[in-house]
Length: 399
Image (cartoon, rainbow, N blue to C red; front, top):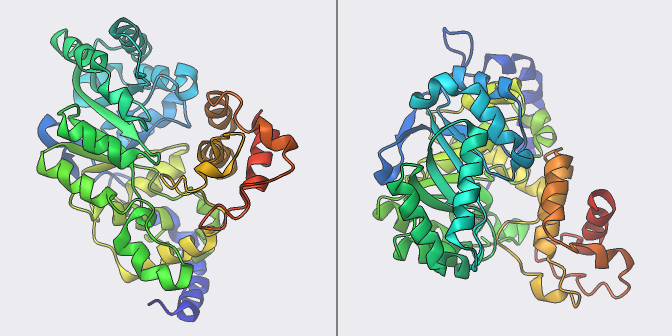
């Protein structure tokens, strides 16, 4: 068990070292560079262990900066920045197309037709300025019926034959993630999976803190299904690795070469069943900080202390991906976890555009919360998140 008094003293001392943060893992080339490229399962693609996520950016300059730092995997989706993220990647990488791995996503529903899926793919290809994507994901899957739809299998096989996609996959972060991953793996529907995975979702971390935080892993079977994917040589990419990305909360406790983000990345990449991670890269400074963690998959005691400190700070104000324990508490059937996820994009990520876009997809979303008098959701969160307060806030700031 970590001695918190010792940790707080170490954190105060570490604050003095922040002035040296720009020395993070510098190389002779004037900045940090990717140190490891991993084989992405049976695709045989070699991808940077820390890769570019574009959910919060449509800036070509950031794409080029990441490329200069050695990042070679760029992930997007048709919905990110209303297509602007795909356009930025396409505009920044035309000369490097043969040197990079590009993935994008569409939300193919349980009753969608392959013609609609093909139309979505062709729209993405046009925005990306390419004739093919390396990986095409069914996006944000939390319902097995979306995977059971035979149109998805037939569409992806046709698109492969036509050379428009090389490999297919699914992404997800909801409460049905493990069930969906099991189905996709067992039915050979994926070459790559992209899923939420952080230290806060791993029993090997949370079990050590249970008697302090009263907090158990939300999806204890997630590590099992990641191992199953690896056994079948399916590529595994992690997302949402920062548990909400409240980086500024941790700056006073960091030291040069040892930031919270880097500790979280090392934790994820220390799992031999994870090939790489994607992270939203929204500034050149953050790109350099993130890339500096490349290649270092060993987790130190100091890393564990940072992660423990962050988990302590977030307890009671972070909605854990995949939990959904509050699902049945609302008589108005508000999708509480999804509403709180969109609020997180605004409050934690500082990305109101993404938050509003995702909130709008929820339809009525939290409209019922604005005038709710019964507040049946009170005490429905095992981690103590004030649901009624947060859903009302989401309705106010995002509607």
